[in-house]
Every structure is written in C-alpha cells, then in structure tokens.
Length: 405
Ligand code: ADP
Ligand code: ASP
Ligand code: MG
Image 1 (cartoon, rainbow, N blue to C red):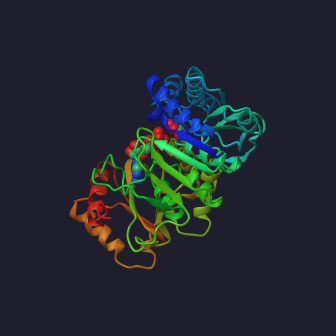
Image 2: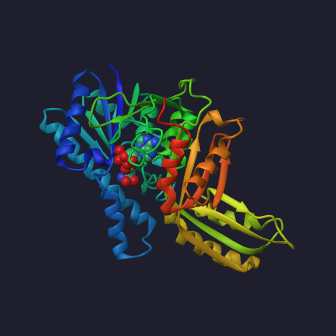
Image 3: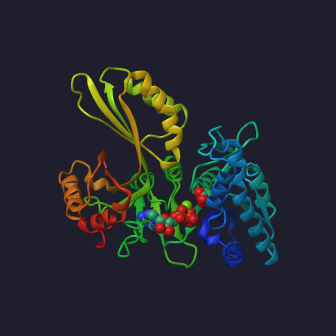
C-alpha cells in the first residue's frame, strides 16, 4: 500500500462539477489500494475575491484578520470534497491546516511552516479514511491562523508528504506539467519530462507560478520527488527530482516571468557605509522581500539606489522607506509599479559565456528596453515595462530555441 499526497489547485475545484470530478479521481486512487491525503486550494478566484472584499471595508486590512478570512476559501473546498467523496460511498474527513498539524511562525500572509505534526492525519488514514486538508494555511503556537503566501497550497502538499513520509507527492493543476515557459503566453512551449530542484526553484522564485518556490525548496531539502501533472487528464506530467536528465545541461531550461514588480528609487543619497543597512534592515523586519538592488557608482559622494519589491508590498515599503530616506538626506524617493521581470534559467549557463549577450540582443530586436539586470549563476533577469513582458517571453523562447527538444 502506498501513501500518496495529491494537491488540486483552484481551477481544478472551481465549481461543484469540478469538485465531483476530482473526487472521482481521488476515489480511484483509493480504490487502487492507496492511502490518500488530498490538499485543496480555494475554489477558482475565491482568494482574489476575498482580498477584494476586505479592501472594500478598508484599504489597509489587519493582517491577522486577513489570514482568518483567506483561510476560509480553502476550508470551503475541503468540506465540499469530503461531502462529494462521502456521497460516492467513501469514508472521508476534512481538516483545516491547524487540525492537520501544520504549525507556522507568526508572519501573517507569508508564514513559514516550522513543523508538521501529522498524528491526526495518520490516525484518520488508519481507519481507512481519505483525508482532505485545507492548503495554504497553518496555525501559530498561539493558535492564530496564518497563510503561507499566494500559491502556498503547493507548500502544504509537499510539507505533508515529507511529514507523513509519503511515497508520492502529486501536484495536479490546469496545465500538463512544467513547460519551457508559461504555455498560456508561448503556445509552442514544451513540457519538460523532468527538471532538477535547482532549476525549478529558480523558475518558481522568478515567477513560474506552476509551483510555489517554498514547495520546491522543501522538496529539495528533503529529496521528495514531486510530480506536476494535469487534473483534467492522465498525461504523464513533469517530475521534479534530484537526478534530472543531463542532455540539456548546456542549454537554457526555461523562461520565467512575473508582472508583479514595483521599483523604488532613492535619488541623491550619501555614498557612505551603513546607508544600505539602514534602508534594508527595516524592510526585512517587516517581511518585505527585496529581490533586485542596483546602486550607481557614486559621484562626489552622492549616489542613487534602486530596488524592487512586489506590488502588494509597495505601499508598506514606501511607508518604511520615506522617513529613512529623509533622515539620511536623500533628495528624492520615487516609485514605479508598472514593471515586470523576465528571466532565463538553466544550469547550462554556469561558466558559459554568451547567454547574457544573446538575451539582450533578443530583447533589443523585439524593441524592448531593459531597466535593470540581475543575475545568479544559473539565471539572468531583466526588469522591463509590464506591457513588454509578454513579448519578451515570446522573443526569448524563440531566441533560445526552447520549442526544440
Ligand atoms: P493551481 O491553481 O493549480 O495552483 P496555478 O495557476 O497556481 O495553478 O499554476 C498553474 C499556472 O501556472 C498555469 O495555468 C500557467 O499559466 C502558469 N505557468 C507559469 N509558468 C509556467 C510554466 N513554466 N509551466 C507551466 N505552467 C506555468
Ligand atoms: N488559494 C491561495 C491562492 O490563491 C493558495 C493557493 O491557491 O495555492 O493563492
Ligand atoms: Mg498554484
């Protein structure tokens, strides 16, 4: 008997019919003699709708209240899934993240899982039940509800698979696996049969939302293979694992994009030690992640500094940065929230020249202006205007010939 954790995303459980369809799939896995734990996301756009609803009440909702509100979306899905399975003759039970033993830190809206205590799940499985767990949520030691960041149900699934020592972790979604780029933007994008954790983590971190980056990170740390496949058919999907195939090592593996980018520029700041720390320490304390930082070469001990944050963090970041900017004597602090980023990723780029030049040339030929550039050993990212992101992805997919195996 195998223990399988299956996760179904929002579009796979978007309405009652879809819930019943997923329940039939889950039931089939159970019929095959497996113990099945199912993680579900909120139905369709529920999370977006709940966020919009809160913003109708107040522009700046309290984060603790927000987490309780958002957690309800996933809870609705678990109850309906359990009802669907019961109506088909299965024995099933729904659990909230807290009931399932998902403990997190106190960072509301972006909490990290600190431990999984899965005894309740195990005892339910032992009585022959299918266990349905609400994704994207946990509780703190004070029993406050937290959420794990947008897309966080993937992380719930991988964490449970690790905590339960499951034989398989399967992420079912609305595409047939991980592609060389978002198949909704690049129709000729190719499904990858498999991919290593390192490349998948880089793609996910830089916007390929088919997997939540923290889910990939957990999978990597605990060597848990993760299958990403369609919830709508039985096609093979993509396996994320340690020993990904070697034949593509000297190529770009995929293109990630993200339209959730805002930039903050501080103009005319003193070029002396301690300035960067005074800016970034308060941001990190507020759990705002900054992913691209560019500082110009100083002239007359004065310099400019630009960094990017996600759009949803911009207001909070500006509130923190504006007084600091004033206190260090910056002449101006400006922001732009109409940006996006596009990244090429591949371990094959390590120590191989030419990739950056090829990327910049492709963007130039597509008439796209690059605003900022950042790199890692296996990634090159360009920040561009949001309206250029789609064309940039298409141009880069073509330039690196990713439609070819
Ligand atoms: P779910 O609701 O199942 O969690 P998501 O919407 O979070 O699904 O993620 C699936 C979506 O990710 C796809 O519909 C696709 O548009 C997008 N996506 C972005 N990059 C990729 C990629 N490289 N491969 C596959 N899908 C991608
Ligand atoms: N429902 C949450 C979201 O929309 C979590 C998830 O779908 O994974 O972000
Ligand atoms: Mg998702």
